Amino acid sequence: MSFRKIKYAAAGVAVAAVVGVTAALSGCTIETGRPRARITVEFNGTEYVTDFELYRDMYPQTVRHFIELADEGFYDDTVIHDYTSNDIYGGGYKYDQEKYEESIGGGSPEDYLDDSEIYLEDDYYALATREDSPITPSVFDDAGYTYDDEGNMLPEEGDALPTLYGEFSENGHTVENGQRGAEYGSLKMYYSEKVISDTAGAQVLVRTGSGETLLREYQYNSATSLFAIQTSASTALDADEYATFGYLLNDDAEAVLDSLMDAIDDYIDEEYNSSRDFTVNAGTEIDRFEQVAEQATAADFDLPKLAIIIRSVEITRY
Image (cartoon, rainbow, N blue to C red; front, side, top):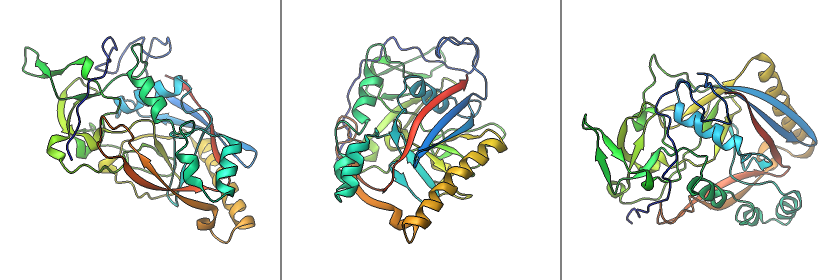
């Protein structure tokens, strides 16, 4: 299988090369090293409002991407589509109560995840590639590039791909003075496994937060909108291959997340024999962009039988 190369119209989208004073985000004039996000999650009729600190000083591309999507309301009224013992995953599927309950109750959860009105990859694709896209490109087709006076590669803006540069060590990203490890309440961008046999042909150009251009494998630079919230002390996600870009703001935020997880545990104790009974396994396809990955990659998600809903993601400090 080979890597299909396609050019997307992304010219005219400004790229912030360094963290500093800018007017790029929602009319704000100052970007801080540690923005904040407020995520409101609803479960069983109760809302849980949790504040997070985003580490732009360590993961500038990832944090900017998350903020740009949040400012567009992209995450509002989405559902946790994968519930595991260590992490909960969201950001890719809309919540529709009637369809959700019908799919779960009818024993066909795949129907929900494969519903074109529910999964958001097409919406993300349209948002990322439109002429006035609010999404700053960081990944580019390697079909064409020029060089600056110092010999650095300059990707063509029109070759932008609708994915995100993976800011983790296995992908050439370094954090000065070392990165903070994953922990309870961490926010992480999700990079799915890819079915790509010709990895040598699946190369892309990536633009780092410092403006450097690198040649890297597509599979490590393929995130769209999916992210995870770590809900245990440990995680199955390797820090070397995932960007851990946010943490609980304070003890109050931790207490709210505790309350949410306690509510889920209480519900499971009352309704089911174990946490495994609380979920239903749903097979689906991810990375549906045929232009980027020739073969859609199959995935198994543990969909909660009672929806865990992300009602909103709001940026409270830029």
